[in-house]
Image (cartoon, rainbow, N blue to C red; front, side):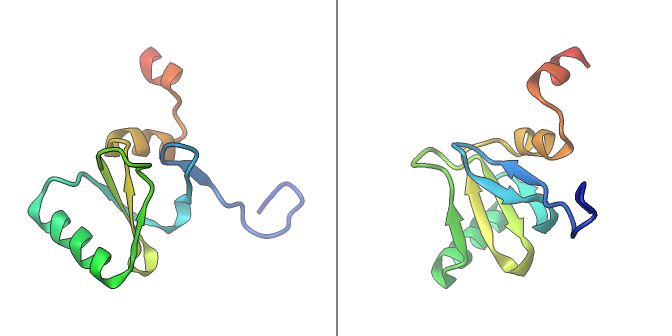
Length: 95
């Protein structure tokens, strides 16, 4: 619930270049180099289920969402997962 007690709070994660996704809909965050992930991305492209959020950069992270949507990001999976957990860069350096 939000501070007013109305409805659930939606947590958004920045996946680079001002692109935000709903954290509650994430199924997996993976690297793009494995053959099964490459097939997943190809199939999603051919079926129109892909969202390219790389802004023309190299794809470094692939985010699989509920309802079989696939999002391409220019950020590493590790960076996205740290944003998901709420750590910022200052906290990461201190730990």
